[in-house]
Image 1 (tube, rainbow, N blue to C red):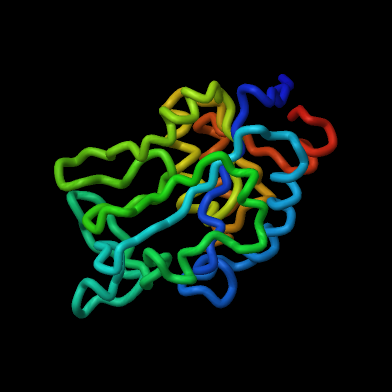
Image 2 (cartoon, rainbow, N blue to C red):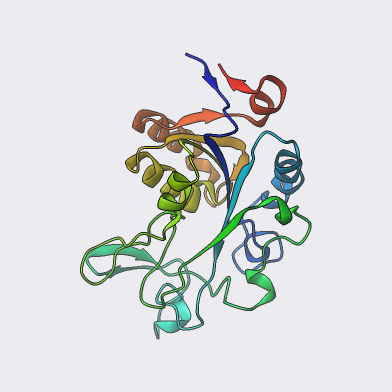
Length: 222
């Protein structure tokens, strides 16, 4: 079944294309620099009128930072509010160069930038919902409502990292009732050895895996 790319009902969501997730950053994603120019080209191609960027924006005392847990090291896991929490290196700290969106991107084409993980007590992988809070809830970021109010029904997701923020965003978008597409070749993973499994799991859940070539050259996904 073909899905036609409807400009009035489709949104491009660029996830966490920030300096700290690129080579030389505090939490680099291997190959992250390889997707910068292709995403910029896609943003400029005129296929999407509705483009939104997601941006990690942590306060220095954020609960996900290993530095805020004495005796703990980055990438260790703890239990937080009844769920697993990975402890990360300090990254994307509010107001720092590492938190900035990649300066070479055409961000003037983005109609909105949603900042996430702004609450020091709650992590946030997804651009649509925060992770669990002390009451066991996952508070919304407001992006789902914004996209729906703008008429979006399809979301095309690209960015970093494929196995965390892209994945969580895609799964939450499905639950919000969107048709969800991950532009696979415009994402990179922290753990690429698990990409085959991730692809199968996303597909099984209803996420369509697409390529940028399918979008640019045909304007629809076969």
